[in-house]
Length: 454
Ligand SMILES: Cc1ncc(COP(=O)(O)O)c(C=O)c1O
Image 1 (cartoon, rainbow, N blue to C red):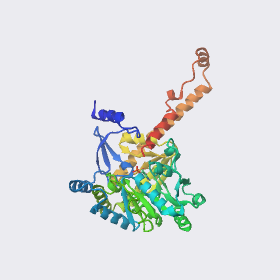
Image 2: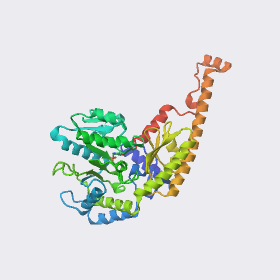
Image 3: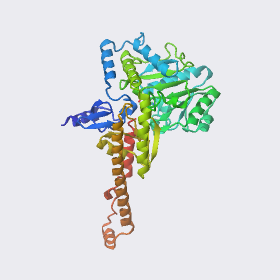
Image 4: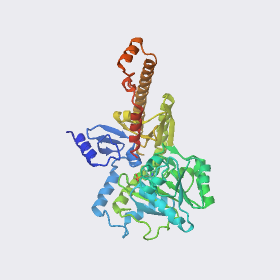
């Protein structure tokens, strides 16, 4: 049995099937990853926005190795230097307040929820208005806050107090405010929702509404934070300051770390014993994060995301103008989506076989999240591959449409002898599948499996 098959067999037998992986990856450098058969891929998923400084950046690797040899963990019963320095740097980059460290995006959003509830507790303010299409995590409370029913299905009853308003509809948010509302939470660019940026008027309007009604404005920066959209944090593009935000994914370049970053208003709401996390902000995790911030700063990756993002976007727009089934391009910086008029999974499968990893999202969107230090030549290579993949896909669609039309013609006007034979044998008309058409349920299943990746 090959190494690839052995790993897949073991994995399928012993790992709970919450994902449906295809490739077995074993090595990464910069924007590239290699599978166990030695095939190389351009990784434009980058751990779903985790590998913002690329795979195995030498400065991050070195920082982790050095710290691992000194001190990995001592619990938060003690001061540690890296946690103090990281909190200072994140605060200076954002809200000038304080930080709570944890391990993941969901845990950071749980922290935001608890922070908002504790803040509003005396005044019985505990409700949180979130957005349709949002994604905040898979714990019960963050799933309840996520504005997508499919994330909640089967886990009911969900925790109470979360109300999704229509994304980019300020009147809808306003109408959902009650005496019990504590906060509104929003992503500057929805990732899982299909790479949908918040409209400027909407985002600014939320801040105004929150000020008017004495509510907290919270941002989920787990996916769009840390330079991804061309500013350190997605909210900064709007010139608006939230009261707190969550961070995770790219903060540790692959070493797990999450953070609740709060402005002055919320900086001291969590007193001793009110919230905790054993692994939150270990010296090792914070070493990875400090090195990640160094790389982003020293390599000027925030502005790089803007400049090369604009070029990549122009390349995608050019493709959109040429292909019938491509509707357009959305996003900001290096968080971009190509919107199709139907399921995106068949295209990402073609791309994967060609050597480009991209993610089918929200059904019909191909999401691109390359490392922020992606080379321009790699972006050009990706556009070339995408061009080819779209051509193959359009050919497939045309062939399928022709085959369907032929099959329909055959059913509508059967040849006289065939009709006679059918009447004798009772045989049915040829199934669509025989005509080379993928059954619609199969296509839907494939798309759903890719989406589960999040
Ligand atoms: C915007 C956003 N928030 C929260 C999460 C959850 O993060 P984690 O998977 O680290 O719990 C994700 C994950 O994709 C996300 O994109």
